[in-house]
Length: 352
Image (cartoon, rainbow, N blue to C red; front, top):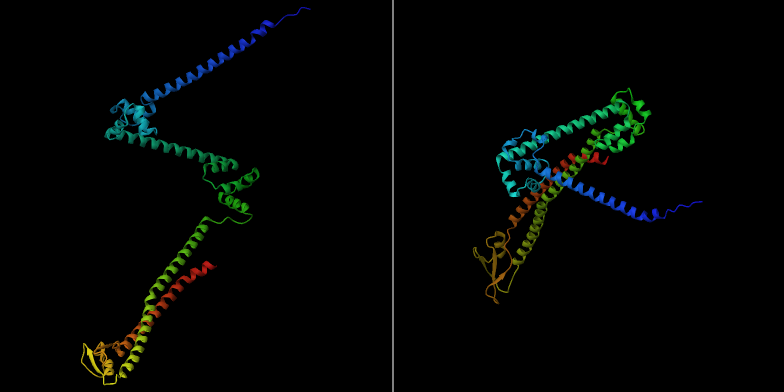
């Protein structure tokens, strides 16, 4: 038997593998470098190229602007910042600001942005029309699952409601041939287990009624607070009347006390600011002097701190204050009764 040796081939196998690996690495590096060069070339072309045909189709006076201004105009209209637009045009940022103050360049920027805005609006409207046609086609052919999924993804449909009425082929066939309002009513009834879904108008009215009740409570509370604050002067007047009555009683007692004062000798009385008299009781009854000074052996002039009080005037003042307080309390009761009568229906409705 003749044996053939594979030793030479086995010996050169690692060198061949290393060479192939090295060649593959070089090819990868060259490919990456080529991609980087292509990307750099594209960026340079975008930075130095004239406006493309779709920009030139816009109704803008391109010939009145320089090439750098055209590049800056395209960059600004494409959503770049002022710094990026100036860098793409190869000018300083202050130069771009000076261009923006130029009437011709400013009008060109506004025209381009206006036309782009109109074009974007038309594209959105066409997309909405296509979506509506797709939904209508899906609903017309009984493909309710696709239609509801599309509405759910668009965000214009109630997700909870859409998740609860995924139309199966049986339900789709059940609703086919019925009017739209009847089919919607049946879907609502089936979803809620025989109970009709509450109308949005009814929900809005209920929320409005609750808000009205809250506002009525707040108004009634403010009214009661204001009335209570207004009743404070009445309480003050009643307190003053009580103090006046106390002062009246004190005046009567002091009158009796001064009348019966005796110092062993006949007192000599002098009225300050009035006519002199020895009859202190008569002076207090007439009210002709504010103070009564009594002369004594021990002290030539000693002030007897007994104020001269006119009993009749204090009585009249007390009666008038009581009358005013009674009238005010009566009107306060009427106002409170009217406020409660106005707010009673709303409060009863809120409790119910």
